[in-house]
Length: 196
Picture (cartoon, one colour):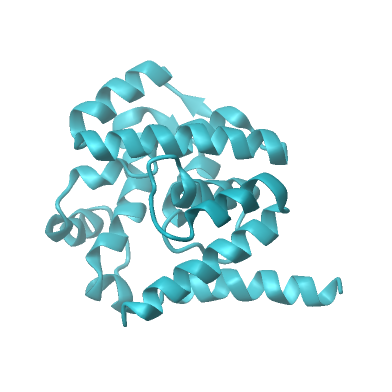
């Protein structure tokens, strides 16, 4: 892990670039990620930094994200083209080195995957994905049940619940389901069947 800025410097830069509510959310995800990292014996510093910076590309308006992605050579699939806000995760994975001095593939991947998941998710990927769903500023009907999963269940049981709730939410809105979310969920279910 190569990091050229302190956590305080990252916070200062991030706070200047994000709206206050988004910055509060980022702090909440960082703290929640550390809680989960302790539970599941994952590097706490990486979890904090990934949580803090996961939404760093939300500094850009939604309509600007496709151009920011193209400038960085990030492919835009049909789901991202229809829902450009998803691109903030991919652009953010590049912004962590551009702006925040973080040169770390694991952190970058966790930022990249925090919105829709992906194949072969690492423990850090899973923690950031779930911390984003349950941080203390989140309020929606299922959040307390998800927080209970974070306290009591295994990492994969927790992630399976989070991915399933995400898919249900998207279906209820008659919106598109990203294939990476389906793949992440199916991998856990297939692994559970192998070990059953």
